[in-house]
Image (cartoon, rainbow, N blue to C red; front, side, top):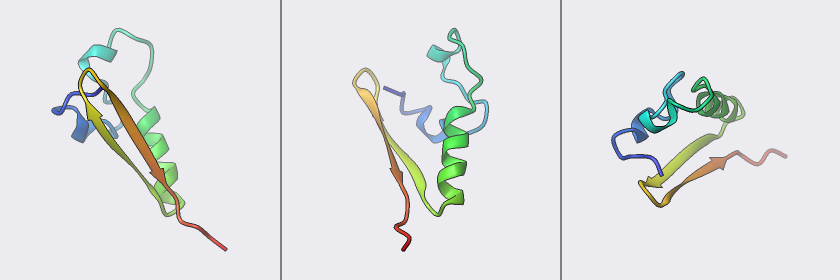
Length: 64
């Protein structure tokens, strides 16, 4: 899971939690995913508990 202090920043471009800095990546994935969801009228939210896991919820509007 993601620490409470990091949750407000996980969708910022290039943000990486301290634990993930030793792993490959640029910190762009979540910011790009949120941008795509918002362009389509939706959003992404996260709930997390350190040591237990994270849940990311993507919502998109129904279009007819």
